[in-house]
Length: 276
Image (cartoon, rainbow, N blue to C red; front, side, top):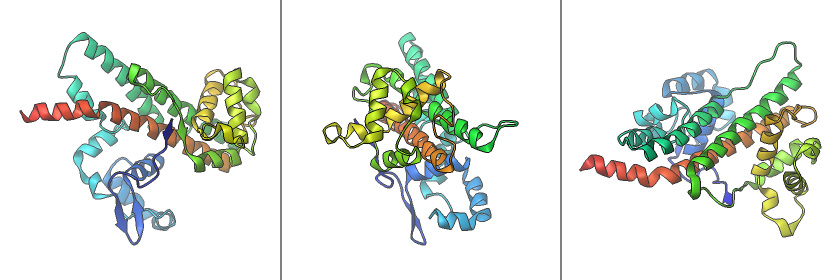
């Protein structure tokens, strides 16, 4: 079971006028705002000064993001450390390495799709319905990336696949009005987990009842099997769409952290080899 890392717990921090932005927060806001370079951040910051101040964002990204290596990796919307990992793997040409790299490339492609996702547009559909479909598809893409990450990790994938985030779990429940009407369409195991998540009053099942991956898994299942509808899923409100966006961001960030933790020893070995 993984407890979601709280904002500011790791990574460089930038302060300006009392505002603080950690590395995960910076990545999350850049992804949400569609920003892919320091220049774009500066242009957005000048054009949206009032919004920036209300969101407590600094006028420019932290100094760590002036590093060209960061932007090489980020501009493609890939997981952190992907570029360095890929360079190290392509130095070797043996079959097992190619097969494993193919699995990781599948994860990176799904991650890119999820991190680049900005919603979908419909012609002739009401805004509320379009908003609901867009929100659910974002969660679907993020969870698909996480599944690909687990598959690529193989036997080293976490056995207890959970992600505890008390605040986000509370927000998701509130956004759905305390009930999820499409739960009856899920298989028995997942339906029971969703029921516990929505109630969240069984102390004997804590902290599993706060596992946000339960809802992400349920949305993924409903979207993939063509069962999901925005009104049945209660995702048509702005509040619900925002909660689902946060859910997708959290799932995607979790997969990136798993990837970094998995490949970091190999990256360090590659750096040592380059220095020889």
